[in-house]
Length: 134
Image (tube, rainbow, N blue to C red):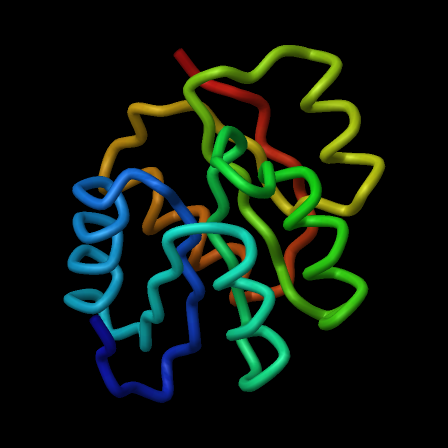
């Protein structure tokens, strides 16, 4: 799924196809260009081929977890703003994500307005790590 826009480029990395497609649809409808990756390895290939402004990344994925993706993505693209979305987070994981440079960290399920707000803030460059919400 790719929408064409000057609003910004968003990479969505999640092994849950339904969730990945839903996020892509919401963000494309909001005017963002979205590219979808089903795992960390695909995300790395995409990051090496094209620039992104924001990456939404799941924590628990096969092959490569979200923390490894975050670490490698920020090495490939230091200006990338990463938002980690997870159903399995805990304070230790959140602290590690913050140490690695995550822009925001939040829990699944995530509301449409919340994801749009996080992406808008990330595009705007304001640095503020969002605590998990439940």
